[in-house]
Length: 235
Image (cartoon, rainbow, N blue to C red):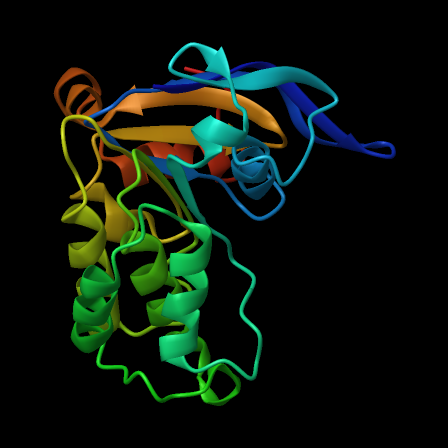
């Protein structure tokens, strides 16, 4: 459904993403893993057209990403992206104006689940409350691909459970979910595959069940091998 071919992005002399080719299939949940600066965020931003690659391209259903295909991709960034004067209700109306697939009913349900209220102002939200709001407004879309960049940052354990339940509910045979996070243990039981990126390079893509059966490893074990001191670059 979503793939990139030999995609590269540089900022001056720094290479953020270096000739990465990946396929993300429908019906699967992917964990995109790697330390800060590995290229995860840049890769996601290129998928939705916020960053232009130097070479290579993203494709949706076999065609280069364009204005129409971007309508089917929901992206949640790490940065706050709402006006501070907005209320939670305003945020929902803002999304409804921009996205045809946005469901106000689902948004209202998710806001209630996140224990937020519609009259809260964005400028008054804590980092944890902002994380909940971003998830609610993103998952209220009826997209075919969801890209969630560090959705668990700044929130406590109980809130993580609520957020991950809301994310997993979007899973369907024709939907692709891609989640980046440093919290490997939190994702391990939820994802079908793990994408390991290091120093702007793709190291490997592992099917989680195959990793357990064939190598007797968890995703956390493989993460430690790749990113720990003296970690292996490729399997």
